[in-house]
Length: 203
Image (spheres, rainbow, N blue to C red):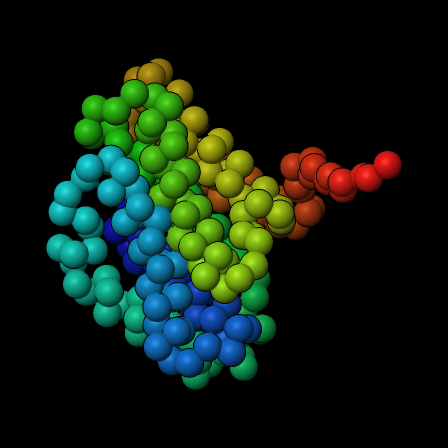
């Protein structure tokens, strides 16, 4: 899981840097958005759950990794359109890994089921929400192919399998494979939740 986590925060940092670039931010802005995107979800989760010390404060190498990935993106951005599909797959891996990590942390702290699921979702999607809010756009997780709902499904499946006595390693493997498959299928077939549109009418 550690290797997947490192891949995940690297991919999220790069997505944050690209979002900053689309908003014509300077290098400091790129670094901040990369950091928030990669590590923001875990930070919010730890603050909400009272899980201290916050993870990245004990592993400064994670900070160096995400800042380095963000700054590297400014150099290779012109070539990244060729890696679009790979990047989407890495992002999907990050979503699933973050969701499982968040669920595990809440379980270890003894929180009830609904909090465990929310912890997984917060870890999985909050970094992207912060990125989009800081870049002044509607968060992608609320308006594109199944994303937050994939995180919800993974967290629920994880708890169901745990309740059935499935071992942690097998449980993690099943959830990771299932969640990744669902996310990639949603991207390929453009699966989305129904949207709600409301326009005020004045008579």
